[in-house]
Length: 419
Image 1 (tube, rainbow, N blue to C red):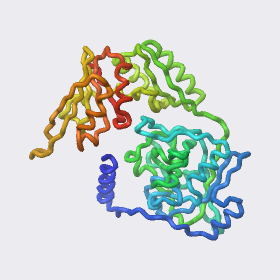
Image 2: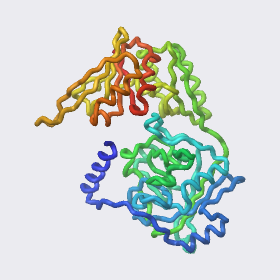
Image 3: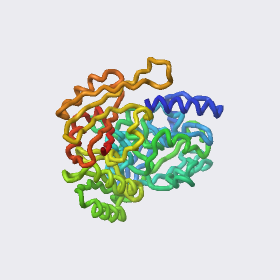
Image 4: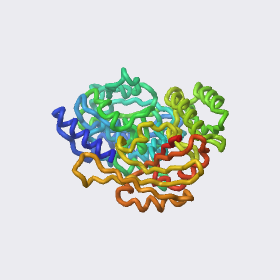
């Protein structure tokens, strides 16, 4: 649904701006002889070379030929991608071979963004990137850092993210440990928005729709113009993952420790609440850590079997079903511990512009009953992946977390309301 809405918004924007809509296109290498020469001169038959001593990885790429000032979503894509119409370069080497070269120099594999796992920040050791024109006409073409090729239209307001080191996540992998980017579109080597399969990411939280139009080409380069891209790692590990074990009393101490770690490391933290923490206390702790998120510390993911910390920060206006943009599943836990599940069916058969809401409530005793109840919500329910849990403020969070084990990943987003 989100992807469909984004596509419609993009089409409307293009129409409003008088820009023609572009279609995906497959890439065919242009300078095959020069590519073969680079491979031979660098003893790199796959189009990528690793230098363990220098901790550098070099790979050859062809310019896609898109014009100056054009919006791009990818700085570099792999040779099997069909997204050359929105990318700066197409690499000669496959993303899998580039990833293997990075690991050959000792660069640790990180973790890409994954909304289902509530991981919204790319996690990876930091690399720098330089781009050098290569080939017979190299002297007439630019070389330099990424900023010599891309312009950030939001640099003044959002920060100069193109000038900062980038995160090497290594990208999401398949069951055999191979990068999805090698075979699955868009085959991103370096995406300019948070894209889990991309090997390299900007070190920030940039969703695709919000970032669209931010990065544009600085100049046009001829189709197939060759450039050598170099990644460099200084060998220093800066990423530190921390799972905070919080009780009803130690949040302040834990926050202080986290701030101290952030002086030395790129800290990615998760929160796990013990059995002493109530819904009310979890909400207060979540508000405090929300202020820290992105300000020296990245709250990234969930503790095992735990809610994402922002689950305890729902908007109060979401309680009003009629005012909500969509209807999530609802679970109500009463003061006596009894539980019920509500599916709010939307009936669009009337003449109005809004649906008629028809709540259907089912009582249940064990959390394990939820999957079966959800299965009965039919086609409309099959599209719902969000659950609101309403519980007394004094209820223990530990008494609610079994809901996660019962329905995740069928339901991947939770919000907890204190009553």
